[in-house]
Length: 390
Image (cartoon, rainbow, N blue to C red; front, side, top):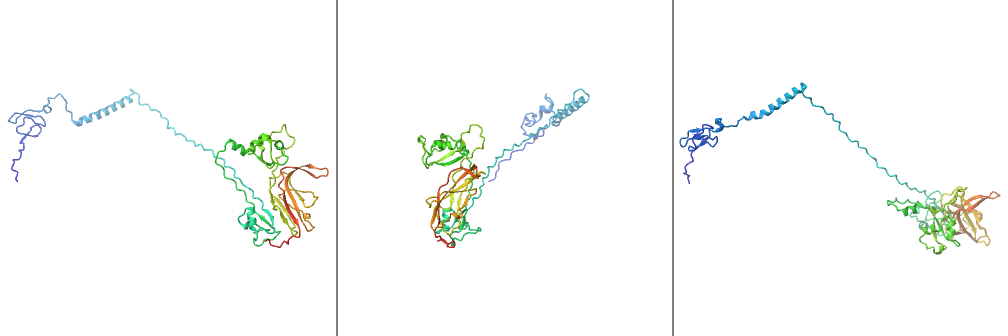
């Protein structure tokens, strides 16, 4: 459908002041404000901003922007002139200290002193003599070894376990003690006191009294009781077989200066190693070695005293031998010659030389406990040294 509505007419009148098209019937220009006569379109009155009748001053935009800049430049020139003429003082330079850079001092933390490393000297091998019925399995079980190749013979070679010769000398290695790991715990006062104290083991024997033991080691009865809480010590009574710890750290001080060196503490009883208790040696065994564990590093005046007695004889005396080593070869003249087996007992203890007799023989005093009693047999018809053990 065709739209037949008439188009709007375009105004044909133009404002003489601003050039804006206005309606033919308009009495006033909406842009500049020019006033027209009604019906004729003749301009009657120009707008105020064009006629110059307004009280305000219209300044071009360029002049308004340039004026402040010109004022600043003029002010600066005037200030320079005044300073040069000496009328006003120039700017004073203020000295500024250079910025202080803080010096950082590094404080090293104290390094901890490394704990001493415990080292142990390897123990000497245990010397044994092959007996009838001995086997490598028996040695391994008795001495706690796991490899039969550790059992050595003369010359350092491993022994042939399938052919053990009676009377042959073998060497059993002793395990080297392993130092315990360092403790990371902080010990309390009681633990530190216990660790710092040295103890001497003592086994109560027949005839001992608590007062006598305390007097022997120069400690008080109360010290012995305090360090041995496993016993009641009712009425200060001790019994045979009680194993006591004697606290050396609580020894009572000796009154006044001593003219002689302080006597070292008694040594514990040596631990006997070989031969085993009750071992029988035949006529073919020409050498018997007695061996025990070291109790400590002996002083110059101290030695091990080894007592040997033939208890098969109705009347026999102990024979005493003094050595620095932990081994003694039984003299060959002890070997019986009557064709019977003789039983010998032996013990070991530490003694200290205290002087000499008029004849020049040394005089010894006991310096420790006596070892356990062991016996061995020697003699009879015996077996030949080449006979292998069963």
